[in-house]
View 1: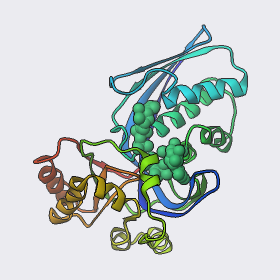
View 2: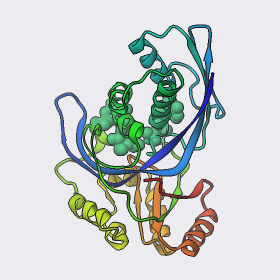
View 3: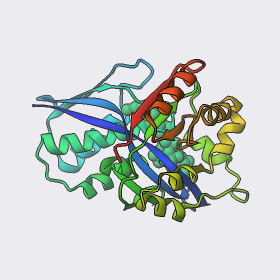
Length: 283
Ligand SMILES: C[C@@](CO)(OP(=O)(O)O)[C@H](O)COP(=O)(O)OP(=O)(O)OC[C@H]1O[C@@H](n2ccc(N)nc2=O)[C@H](O)[C@@H]1O
Ligand SMILES: Nc1ncnc2c1ncn2[C@@H]1O[C@H](COP(=O)(O)OP(=O)(O)O)[C@@H](O)[C@H]1O
């Protein structure tokens, strides 16, 4: 048996951190949506009871550290499945980038194996299993556009934003999510207008969306890597309607509804950055 699953990246249109919790995680409030920048995952059933991972990027782990491995293991244990699976990951999403690349691979494996092995678990049950792997996995299991609260796992789905282009730049740095959370000064955050953003999305008001992009983690990552903040400045100079960092970074994305402006942004940014992508929303 074989199956191919698509694993799309997410961006955070807003990202707010409300407080630190007793369990060490932070209480967040963020608006997440999926974009058409995706890994492709090929699942093949094995007679032997083992999990094999293959990735087309050398620096991504191909052992039990891979979140796709952890997803297969948890699902097999949960359902007491004795057959194995070979997982080939065609990695297109930049790694350690704030785009939930690992989480979305794990989510795609949960969805894909549930289908391929006809396990009949609901999406909510898969999301619950996924939370054991990471805070962003439940959102990635569902996809779409949602307000995420709690650790990021409490999801309220909202309609998709109006269509727009997303131009992403992944600067040549990786950041640790844990480190960025740890460096936040919770008493001095400039909180996003989350309610205003939700209304703008519901009203399909592009200007309302582009003017409310905000992420409280930007200051931390921009202080660590001032060149990341330069990318955002350049995006605005090149005609972006709005620009913001995704997640803990360092990826910064710009949005525009105008295709020729997206092309201009791509060409301008490509002049000084290697990893630039232009994609549509999947939302
Ligand atoms: C910041 C965000 C925004 O979407 O994305 P990324 O930058 O990873 O894409 C997420 O909150 C990242 O979620 P995820 O990457 O799944 O984090 P996890 O693996 O669960 O946790 C990694 C570490 O981040 C910290 N963490 C994570 C989530 C949270 N709500 N509070 C935290 O303090 C904890 O220190 C934890 O040990
Ligand atoms: N399937 C996977 N794809 C990418 N990274 C993975 C995967 N499995 C484990 N990792 C590890 O997870 C870490 C974070 O990667 P990633 O999910 O891309 O970050 P982010 O959540 O910031 O987008 C990296 O150190 C990487 O080695």
